[in-house]
Image 1 (tube, each protein chain N blue to C red):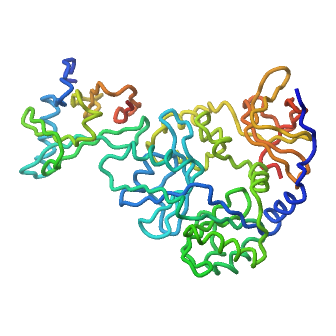
Image 2: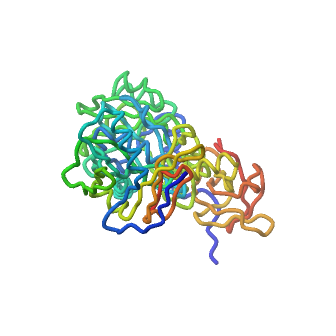
Image 3: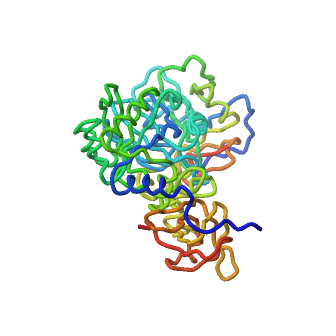
Amino acid sequence: MTRVQAGPPTDLASLATSYHALTERAAVIDRSGATRIDHAGKDALDLLNRLSTNYMLGLMPGDAAGTVLTSDRGRILAALTVVQVRPGELIIMTGVPAATAISWIDRFTFEEDSKLRDVTGETSQVAVAGLGAAAVVRAIAGHDAASLQPGKCVAVTVAGQRTTAVRTDAPGVPCWEFIAAREQGVHMIRAAQEAGAVQADGAAWEAVRIEHGAPEHGHELTEDANPLEAGLKSLVSFTKGCYVGQEVVARLDTYDKVQRVLAGLLSDAPLNVGDTLISEGREVGRVTSAAYSPGLKQHVGLAYVRRVDATSGAQLEAPGGPVTLAGLPLR
Amino acid sequence: MTTSTSATVPLNTVAITEKAAGKVREFAAKAGKQKWGLKVAVKGGGCSGLTYVLDIVDAPAEEDKVIAQHGVEVFVPKKSFVFLAGMTLDFSDGLNGKGFQFHNPNAKKVCGCGTSFGV
C-alpha cells in the first residue's frame, strides 16, 4: 500500500493566501457551481413548511432561512437556504442538483400554486467572506447590504446590475452571497477585488468549512444521516407540527436516540474521505471531509463518530496515522 | 362506536360510510350550504409524506372524480385519486373516537396521528 507523504499540500502558499483572506480579511469566491432554484406561487412557503424541518411560514420579505428536506425516515435529502427578497419571490439555494430538490417537492405538489424553476445556469453566485468582508460589501453594494444580519437579504445594485445579497455566513465566517445574472458574476468578482478582496479558491473554503463543522452535500449531508446527527438542530422546528420525516426526527430528539455526532479531526498526516477511524480495534467512524488548515497547520477533517466514542481529545487510528478527535468548531 | 369497514372497496372508486356521510351532512348544514359536495384529496406533508384533506366545497373541479353515496357527493381530484382509490372514509365517535378515519389500501405506512400516510 502506498502511503501519501505527510505534510501540507504543495501549493501551500496559494492556499495560505486564500485562507488568510477568508478568515482574517476579505475573500471573494465564485460559488456559481451551487444550485439556485426560483420558487414562485402563493403556496410556495406553505409547501416548503410541510415538506421540510424548519418553520417557513414566518419567512418575511428580507429574510433568508435554512431548512432541510427529509425523507419519511427523517434522513437528509437536501439542505436548503430559502431567500425571500420581495413578497412571493423565493430563491432556493442548495448543494444538491436542482433536479433532486425539484422532483422531491413536485412529488408532493397536488393542487398548490407552486412553480419551481432551475435558474442555476442563468445566474451566478459570488461570495464575499471574511472578518473584513463588510467593508468590501459596503464598497461594492452599499450600506444596506453591508449592514445585513445573518439570515437577512436585500435587493441591491452591484456593478450597475440588479443583484440579491444574502447574509449566509455559510462556511462559518461572515459571508455575503450575491446572486445575479450569469454574465454579472465576473463583474462582481472584479468589483470585490478592486475593493480589496482576494480571490480565494475552493480549497480554502473547504478548510474553513471543516474547521467550523459546517456539513456539506456529498460529504456529511447524505441520506445516511439525519439532521440531528449533522448538527443541524437549529434548522429543525419542534413546535410547528408535521412535516415529512417529523415523527422520526422528533422521536430521536425526545428520547435522546441520536447515535452518532459530527466530530472534528486533527491529524499530522493527510486524511482522506472514507478513511476508517479505529479505536481499540473497533471502527468508530469514517472521514467525511478532509483538508489542510493553514491556520492550524494541521490536516483537519470531519467524521460521524459513534456518540459513546465522541470524546474530545480521544486518540483514533486512521490509515495515514494517529488522529485526534476534537470538538467543533476546531478554531 | 365505530362502523365496520371490513368490506373491500373497488379500486375504481372511494367509499363513504353511512355514519361518515351523516357527519358530513351535519357539517354542511351548520355551514349553511345549499348545494355542496365533499372534497376528499391528498396534499404533501405530514410525518409520512402525504396528508388527507377534507373540505366542503360548492362544486367539483373540472377533472374531479364524482362519487355519490349515502346522500353525499364526493369530489376527488384526479391526481389525488391515484393515492385514494379503494379507500373508505369512516367516522368514529364516542369518548375514544378519532373523528374521520381513512381506511386506505394504498397506505403502506401511517403515522401516529392517522391523517398522514406514505405509499
